[in-house]
Amino acid sequence: MSNYPIITVYIINHNYGKYIEEAIRSVINQKYKRIDIIIVDDKSSDNSEKIISKYEKKNNIRVLYNSKKIGLIKSSNIAIRASIGEFVLRLDADDILHKNCIIELYKKIKKNKNIAVVYSDFYEIDKGGNIISLQKQMSIRSKSNLKDRPILAACCLIRKSTLFSVNLYDEKYSRQDGYDLWYKIIQSFDFAHVSLPLFFYRKHNNNLTKKIKKLHKTRSKILYNFAKNNLKNLKIVIIIPVRGPKIDKLKIFKLHQNKPFIFSSIDESLKVKNINKIILTSPDNLLLKKIKKKYRNKIQYHQRNYEQSKLNSNFKEGLLEALKEIKKIDILVIILPQFAFDKSHYIEQAISKLVLHKLDKVISTVVENEKNFYKYTSNGLKLISNNSEDILKYEKNTVLIETGGIAAYNFKRYLKGNIKKISNIILNDYEIKDLSKI
Image (cartoon, rainbow, N blue to C red; front, side, top):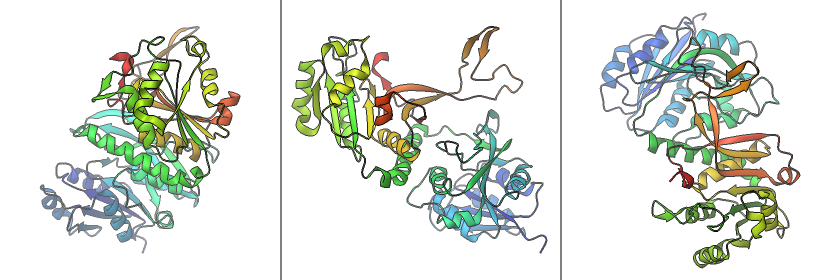
């Protein structure tokens, strides 16, 4: 019994015949040997089956062939139910484990029975296996840490009893399994981080735009699912401030995908769940009339004082004037109409995150991990972002850039100006159109 597997590694494959053998070999070559391996082929149409069949007769490897394609989430649940290890680790068929991966993760998880998940840093690699970057994941050092940034789900070592306690992966989602699992587990169990790059995560560019759009929409659904009970009794107001052409040169009626920027903001706001009021505020009476002609009583209109709308005026003062007749506001969302993108699911994501993590503010951002950013110091410039001057040329520190467009607030904190706990949502940066740059 001393050789009985403690850890099950399961590999989910669909048409990754090009990479699957390297993934399997990376598990076989682990320094830690008490491993059970399950390979699930999700109805591949390439040469995957021919490659996988070579490993079917090995003692510690079992192969399951799906009769039809069912996707990553359902295939993962099948593998977990079939596993015999106390712990499980998912390896995607195009990724690779470092030879020390399992031994390092296992050393960490066995120290404390309260630890449900152990995760590590990782290398991003391209299609040819070349290292692109070293990705360092955030450590969660205490229960008081803000747990608003889920880890990468791949190659985590997870206590199997924990997975069953939360009813495995939710099969109504086709992607973003890590997001769903994070919010299921994080409230009741501990996570631990190993500060070593222990796997190689392959980055593909095929159909990236379409995939990322689906990813963001699924993320919003998952967050809403966890936040919806807390949203039931909250009063949520969206306000869209527009200065108008007399003050601001931005032409908000300029078309983006055959729709004016301002109509895009209103239409997307109307789609958002649990919204009590949408207010358009502007000093421009003609602009208000034009929009009222289209939307009538679907939204509320407020003619702002001209003095409160000047470019150097107090922005907050003008917004509060538009809100003063509303008796109760719990969450305020400010939408700037000079940004055009599919806003509704992003707005829902910001609101859900604000409520779930009891934040003061959530802003919309994009990721920048290519450029270098510096700050002035008494000794000259100091690099504060990407460590391109270090020995590890591929090591990058991520910088988040605020886009504008969406800001969600705890309204009480907004009134007091006491904003301390701030988080973000990440937008699909090549989907965003900024009117000021057109």
